[in-house]
Image (tube, rainbow, N blue to C red; front, top):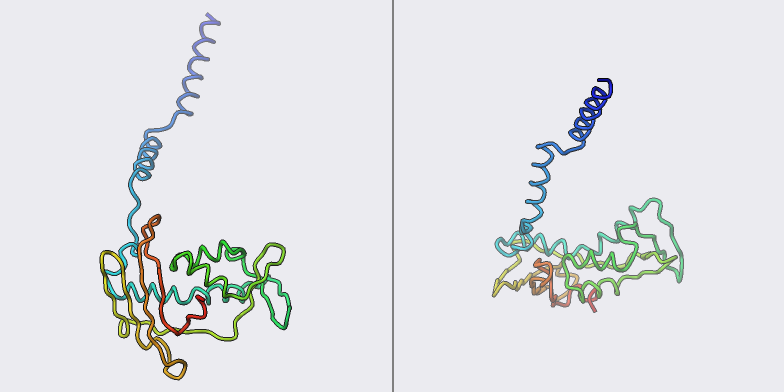
Length: 206
């Protein structure tokens, strides 16, 4: 009788342990929902629908024209960053998000095609210190004026041809018109600037 009771006790205990370790119905439901969500195609972002509204294009181009300032400002904001002085220039250490060429070009490529993104990087004054990128702030900049008032957008076969007139102060340059050609990247399906034509600010892309 004693052995029989022991056997029942062991069987009951094993059932309880198995029940505790087995996933609950709620957990199973969560796993099913997670698998279902992962199987769905990703939702299109606004940038994949760029051109349906002029303001969307204006916002995109303004962000694109200020990517250099974003990198420069990150160097100023990097309180723990080191500085290096060479050839009368001061190079500031960039934070981790921008501490390599690949990271900087990758950020630029959110807006510009790869060749233009690389041209932007090549025209920056940079220095490698222990495999980390340091940057020297430029002495000139090219602030652009892009708004719905001076921007014309034409959509053709999915591409965007954008003309921005009076994109700079008249006292700065005579030719103040900038023309952009935007296409969809084949991999990401997101819009990128394929070409930028205009005298103003062209130094950054040569």
